[in-house]
Length: 81
Image (cartoon, rainbow, N blue to C red; front, side, top):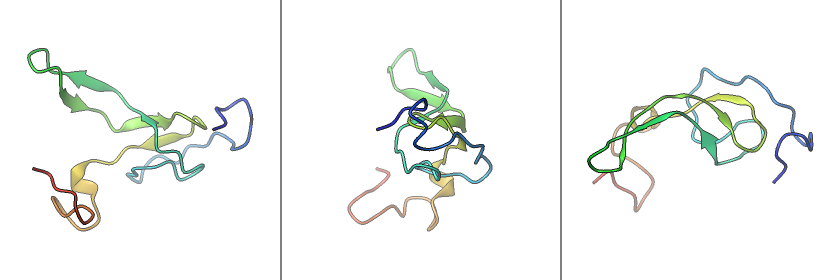
């Protein structure tokens, strides 16, 4: 894992198309703003503007509505329930 500074991947602005991974380096750790529910300690809201933890490229994080096959139709074995 090369955190930007190693310059393995240049930082880019690839925002605009929702994605679950960084299209520049393939990193799966995306940094986005979240708002926690004080009662349940779960994520209550999140923003989609973010960046890749690894290469620092600007990204647009995906939401469940962005899934290519529609809401609740995740990969085999995964459900929204």
